[in-house]
Length: 379
Ligand code: SF4
Ligand code: SF4
Image 1: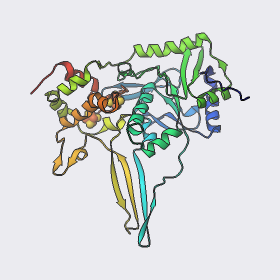
Image 2: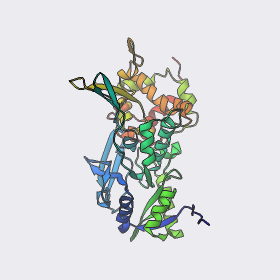
Image 3: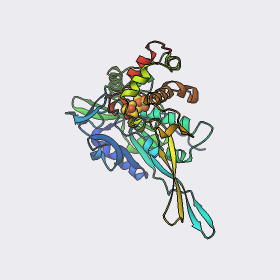
């Protein structure tokens, strides 16, 4: 008789000094670990060899058009909110070669392969980011067609959540119901607790792969007190959320205010730099570029991220459909908070606040939506 598999989630405690054991278990299973690290004055995602690469002792300050790192004064590993990078760059790369053709006698030989993919463990995924990945799943896997590049990367990714205990003043995931606590969709979820003299992680498995990792770590089961301390740390984060966005009636109000004069006012401030779309974990627009070598023997087609803030993005024969900055901002915000719901059944915004911090002129999606929805203005 075959032994029945234990499918119950497991909750254990990993002392912070043993974090390197998690790295070793992941590496022994063939994973390349991706996670937060300090580079160029920001917390970005990159390959990690050990816990020494994590931003231990660092935290961030974020406001409209402002992002700064500073020492936290604590020895915690994950006391910061999201930075300019998102997991989108690994699942849906900024540039990807779609195919390559080589001249072969009188014909061509097609190469649509891009080499083997690495098996990635995403360490430090926040709840808002997990929801952003779910949104990309809807767009790129469950929308009547499957994007093969995304599908292959998504299948290989092991998701390790680190529950958010340090939201920035730009965060509003609680309003979007996307955080700060991740409830599902992960392989492992960790909560960092530093209370008095103790510093540990409460680990919870969320899939068979996560359960196997927890079993290999062979940690003690978490006590009721440790689980309560972890819950309290995340609850406190929800109460410290920096911003709010009232989503009640938002879609209808935005549709009713297509001609609101405030769109023009935002357009006068917007630099069309595209930062907001590049840092956004859910923006998925791309363009394609064809290139050939000088001899004409090889041709390639590349896909790269694009942005609805450029004039070229809406260029049809004869000109751009959205020729003013205000029209382009209206397109972006109305898509995120209104027509995305019609297309994909959810908002296209998870409240991560990146577009607020990285907009060089401090345009704030929560403020603009509030103004746009305060009253219906028809011109
Ligand atoms: S629109 Fe802004 S706040 Fe919303 S998910 Fe994108 S970057 Fe984050
Ligand atoms: S809203 Fe801000 S970040 Fe976005 S394109 Fe305009 S200036 Fe750049």
